Length: 143
Image 1 (cartoon, rainbow, N blue to C red):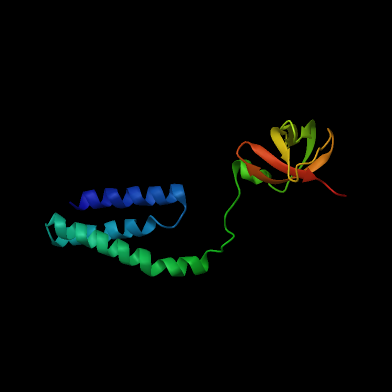
Image 2: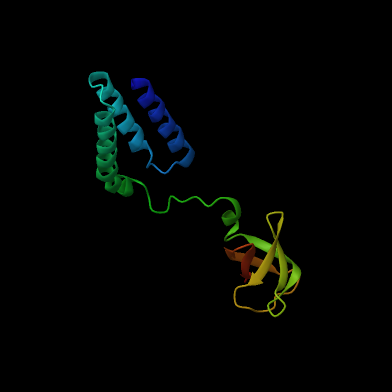
């Protein structure tokens, strides 16, 4: 049975690497504890209990420590959210009444809406405040 627990531990480590949430790692350690127990005891039930107990204890005992160590602002904006705060240029007038408008930010064109529901003419520089669905919410850049 030790091979089974080794495979499970490896799968949890790979999953941890893929998610980087520092949550699944404790299950990998629980699987390694079950691996050690499997060398001593043949009962699958005992091994499974060791896996669950060790994983649960490690998860709850170390979560407060991880929260202290990991900064709260460690969230890295990626994909579309990485353009928040960036400057763009209006390519099609932003008209709140008709719901039309487009801006170009970082070489990409986005449907746009003004943050305060005002008209923003073409070629105006704007700053992206946030993203709602597939539209960027912008306001004119004040110089």
